[in-house]
Image (tube, rainbow, N blue to C red; front, side, top):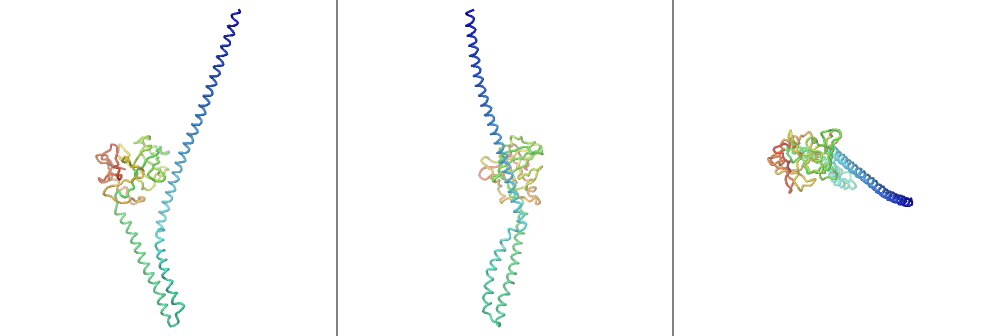
Length: 318
């Protein structure tokens, strides 16, 4: 009996020690879990901020593109109204005006009645001569204006196209079209351009991210299922297969693609009525080494190399 009591006391003491030890371990686990929950909350907040920043960057890019488009439209309207030609006649008028005042100032105070024919002779001829001078000048200007469009119309080759190296920063599926991608593309300008491409059936989405490409940058912007496309990704194409053209290694966004034997500056924007792209496109092909060409002249980035398809030979490019 006497031995049983101390044994019971010892067992109770051991149980209490174990319970206290487990309680402290439970407190440590709870504290650790609290820390993990706090870390997860901070991580979630950080991810939400990153997403919000990306959205704001895309919205800023779109706003910049809209502003550039509005500027371009304003400049075109000013050209159509002849605003750019206004300074030329104003300078001539200033010269004529500056030469006219001395003529009436001399004879007016000193000329008596008999010398009347003198001032009349001085005052009348200058306006007639000025009017005669102005008319031929206007005709010459008109002739020059007519000459430049005729030259542009006569020359239709690949030099009219603004082909540049670009980097597809991001691409996502079009919200309203299953076969279209909507891409943000850096072509060496202040803000990326929005480009819509029908490549969903040919190129996986993961291969469209952060990818170098060749882009036609002076097509007239066109709305495709509600999204305005500001350029076109150049691809080797056949009925069964499509490959994006790769620029040479070392090329950077904004590098111009040129063609030996076809010098000249590209149009600021191709006029759809002139159908320049439609006339040039049939002569764009890859050769036997997959090099992109126009009438045998390679798509070339000066000092860096040529543009190529990955595997497609003797294929059209569009």
